[in-house]
Image 1 (tube, one colour):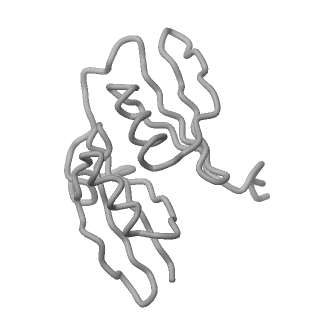
Image 2: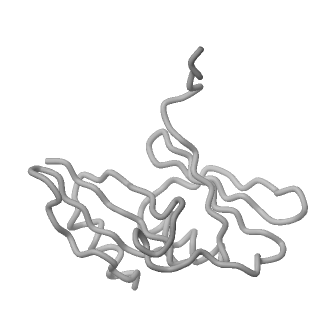
Length: 134
């Protein structure tokens, strides 16, 4: 028996150290739509943003966790290391991130015919890939 998806996207939760910096990045720079803030059990807030059908949940806890995500993107550690945003214009996405001061981890490049990517870091050092398909 297969698991039947309730909708055609996967929700992504990211625990953040600075909610305002993360909101500026994902909402104002990337362009995700901020749809709601939800209180978290035990204290804190889940900032809910939509990108197409995907829900991005930025979680700001009342007490910031001691441990942080290891830096280094793909090669830095195992586990979930990056998220991908499919975009219509890779150059615009990269320029917006550069203008906002986001570090560029991987410069724009074609990875296979008709498919290009670039990777930036969000305020917590998480890798964010932008993908464009011609």
